[in-house]
Length: 319
Image (cartoon, rainbow, N blue to C red; front, side):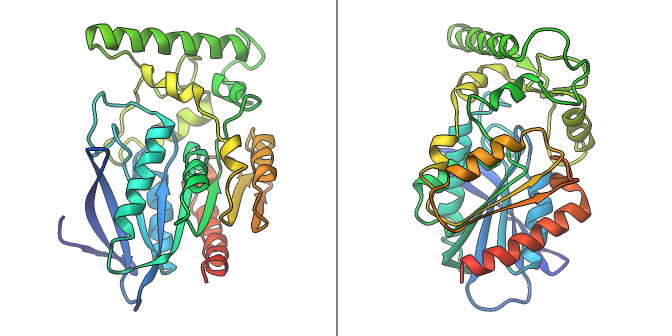
């Protein structure tokens, strides 16, 4: 662990912890002048992102609101261990969140009874899975979530308003089938030869990448100077990715849930389905009509408003 450096109203520590025998790298943000055990927040970012991307935007602000906030790289990406690089499997990321919870609740600054989870993008559906199984979660925030059920998976194939040529080419269903076939072939190749097939995470024109369309391409490429991010992912990870769904987990969540979503995001119906599925009575949906998905990731004014909302809401739920 390195010496903490001063930044704003909090200290930042480079930390590491273990998840299923792999060392994960994190940045812990500890409020500087607060006293007594403090609430904690564990933050999981979007698909194939690293801790210096959107998670850092929320960790720094939540620390200024009095939370011990952890942003970390999931296994196989950024500064965390794991081979092959760029492997993105939702249930493995959920397991990494549980390991992060184990670690942060052992910190002396933390009040073990006041834990919040924050998931951004794909991280939102993955922390829903964690909250459905882990009673230590005192409150859950799903921010600009990518939610997974059969009706929403067509979004994965690039059926979005910013696609390079919307309404042309193969159907979303056929693109999903092709993606699944590529994943199975890549998995078989790795099992037989130990070789890893890679494709870009984003591209403004191609429809065979992980996140097709111009909007994800603009955002991810804007982050290239932050953290150890690469524009590639291991294709074989799509076997687990395409089998994953989050709606059934949402039905099991009993912790308080705050869902923040932009009115300009193309998957508002999926967000509503997941919100309605949550059985607990302490839930609230916050919609910014003019916000897009990526504004919640790093637009300063949007993130400022989101964190103010979350700090107030968490404070009420974790009191």
